[in-house]
Image (cartoon, rainbow over all chains, first blue to last red; front, side, top):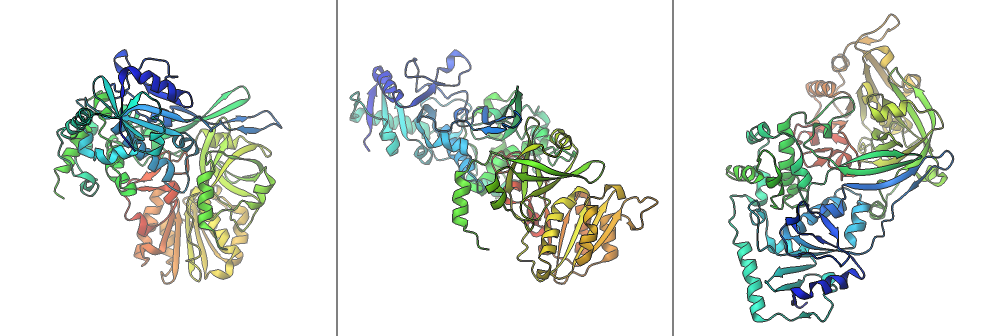
Amino acid sequence: MADKVIAKTDLRKWLAGMAADHDVIAPIGREAGPATWKDINGTQDIDITANQMVMAAKEFLLPVHDVLFRFHTRKGEERLEVPDLTNKSTVMIGLRLCDVRAISVLDAVYYNQGPFRDAYYAARRDKLALVAAVCDDPRWSCFCTTVGDLKEWKLGADVLITDLGDKIYVQPVTEKGEGLLQGDFFSSPSEDDVRKKSEVWANLLALPKRPFAGKDISKIVSWDDPVWEEQARKCIGCGICTFMCPTCSCFDIQDETTGSVIERYRCRDTCQFSDFTMMGAGHNPRPEKKMRVRQRVLHKFKYQVEQFDLIGCTGCGRCVESCPVNIDIRGIVSHIAAEPL
Amino acid sequence: MSIDTEQMKIEMQTQNPYLPQLAVVEKIIKETWDTKTFRTVFLDEGLRETFTYEPGQFQEVSVFGAGESTFCLASTPTRQGYVEFSVKRVGVVTDALHDLSEGSIVGVRAPFGNWFPYEEWKGKDLWFIGGGIGMAPMRSILNFCLDNRSDYGEIATIYGARTPGDLCYKDEFDEWRKTSALYLTVDAGDENWLGNVGFVPAYLMDLAPKPENVIAITCGPPIMIKFVLQNLKELGFQDEQIYTTLEMKMKCGVGKCGRCNIGTKFVCIDGPVFSFAEIKDLPPEF
């Protein structure tokens, strides 16, 4: 598979070409205010190498309101109506390597955790191609290089794009990705293009790393560490960290009745709420905030490591930026890493 | 019976696990002032014939509009054609279930979770130690073992409730007594109560089963389980000889919604049945 370059002035042609037989969703510039993934229909101006998206890719794979089915209740005509899951192929363009990695974590849960596969997730994921932008402008909150190996993470994408200024360096990673690189506006990269692309990578990999124990953190992290209580003291339990997190995907299931039709949908839920584990008869296995703070960190840095050999945090920094009381997961894991093995 | 596990895996991976099957409530038994047992039958005739499950597994039951809740299957797969589950009235969905009448339509997703390793128990004596609504999952495995009576040695059940009026499955007591021992106890008796008065763990010490070649299965309120466990250890039982079913809040039942984990274990897919040897290694958060 050969690398290519495309002039930024030709970007719209490429997007329009893909939009002919795909839904193309891409970030609309963050400067314009809270942005989410948009189906661009190949028409709108977008900046595919813009900064990290406000919301992670789970917005598409696990919509905040995901209809599981509708039940028609009219007497004698009771039946289930299942949403059509045969969606069009979709290209998601502009996501960062942290978000690519997050999809690998979601894949582990939604395809393979337990004997069942999540039919809704799988229908979307099976027809999804990921065109990932290599970061040339990490945010202050980012710590991807601390928690993982970007060279491994990039293999989760189908195409990698790197902003070279007036053009974009395009690398197919999978056959699916190579299939997206059709058109006479692609040309072979010059030596200068290759050098510039390598520079972006070198800058990214040279990001300062924080103290971190790698996957060994799962072995050294302590259930009784005072850090849980310390962090819980300032936590207001709002759950925004999990709402913004690209790998947090816990959900609730609810029914909504309109006339004779009942819609069952799933929606976001969070381990940060005490309701999350509260049982009907009143018993709650995680009644204290420190237990819920611990659950969030251990799920990512211990449980998922032991289950999937994957760290469930991608260092995207969204929880760091969005926390209203400045709880910083980087500080928590660095603190843990400082413990003797 | 041999199960083609590879084929089973393919089926599980291709079906949509969130879609309930419609079932009709065929029978409602009022067990106590706050608990009813429901017998449901699938509307689909084919499913009615092919559906089976294992003792200890659970199901998600929908009252459309009110929502879905988790209930252990309280019937035994040795009696096919229907399933039964017992519901204590505690919240929105259980309220809605209690308000149903015979003939109502509900949604059922089942079966989920693991089950009691009854094959390994063959030839052993079994002691069932249950309290309150915890008797529901025990009823499944108890009736299963009674229906396969020759596979097991002595079978005894200690069943406790707050008052005589809080005991479920009273209609079956005589049946159970035919081929097994039944020891009932209540926290507080009434003028007609002739049985034992006292807590389940204490009654267990009075009866003092010897641990040789015995499996103990216990289910009930967490506080009861705690003391039953202590007392079983005192009687000489090893962790591997003791089983329970754990309860955590669940929604999806299939290991996705993230609600029922205890450390790395998800009660919906790794449980709900655990031996105490397994529970010992779990973080204390259930």
